[in-house]
Amino acid sequence: MPPLGSAMEDEGPARPRPNGHRVWILICLSGPAVVLASAYVLLAIAHGELRLWDVPVHESGRYTLGQTVLYFRHFLREVPTAVAISLFTTAAYGVPHPSSVVARPRRELVTYGACLGAAVALLVLSLAIVVVDRGAQDAVRNLAQFHTRDELIEYGSHWRFHFLSTLWVGLGALVAARIGARWLGGPSPEPWTANRPLTIGAWVYFLVLSVVFVPTLEPFLDPRFIGHQAREILTHAAVTLPIGFGIVALIHRRHIAPEQEPPPIPPGAPVLVAVFLIPAYLGAQVIFGDVLATGQTDHGMAALVAAHFFEHSLDYLFVGLLTAGGYGLLLASHARVPRRRGRSDS
Image (cartoon, rainbow, N blue to C red; front, side):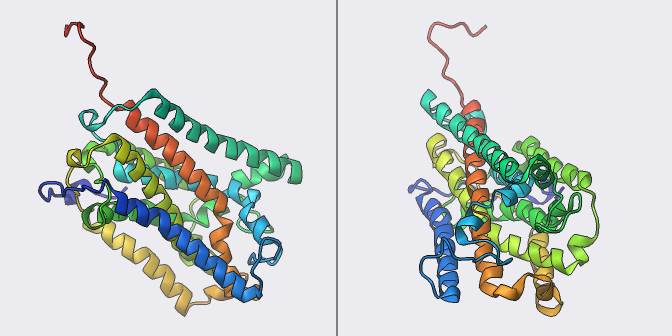
């Protein structure tokens, strides 16, 4: 777990945000749309087709764009990682003190609960589809991280396929949240000392699964693992994390006035170093090693990179729903309820 507490210092009064985080929300929610549109254009150019839904675009050459977007088997593999991303996104901001949280109408609690229910429904639906299509054993294997690619089966391999990229997401979320608060009009994260249980919970989840799924040196040394983790960082940095941040900012805007937010506090130096070194190491291995030779590059770089953004479409939806439901209910549960008149203080 990153040693955050010792490296944080108060930087003075909070910067006023009269726009209510609208700039940050616009950046976070429009950025992924631009990335996905650009990826679509690259695929359209590569295939010489404007309508790609029925055109094979996946790096394996087997799946059309429609099948890549609705790739339920892959989504089941990604569920543990997606939960980690949602937890890290939530932990990066934390839960404010009850005195800062404005109680909202009960219907908003219903909305947050519905988001959480929709995330569970998406998981159940995906399980059912895979069970009908491939059988229960295949569904369990995908959830239990047996698959990297469809044809490669080894227990825990898919979690290890994302170890460094998920670690980077946890650290990168801390840095990005504070950059957004300081320079881009985003909500201010809570101080580490006020957010300790939530942050510890997110990192314990990550560490426990890393042990359960058998730690190896593959994420650091295997060219196939290195190349995939580099793509995962690109995907989550450009799309998944911004979606989560945008949702958190929308919920903040509903529950917390900007003047009640704490001042933005920088992350510790070890976190900043790790956020730089992980992608630098993976990138150097991709450029100077034989990583690209291990990828499914027979169908071109557009399939290897651009199509990968669409392979995670169900993950974006799941992380968005999970973050909206979980973080919304957390904030709502911490709202200070006004005392009714006539009640005794005793």
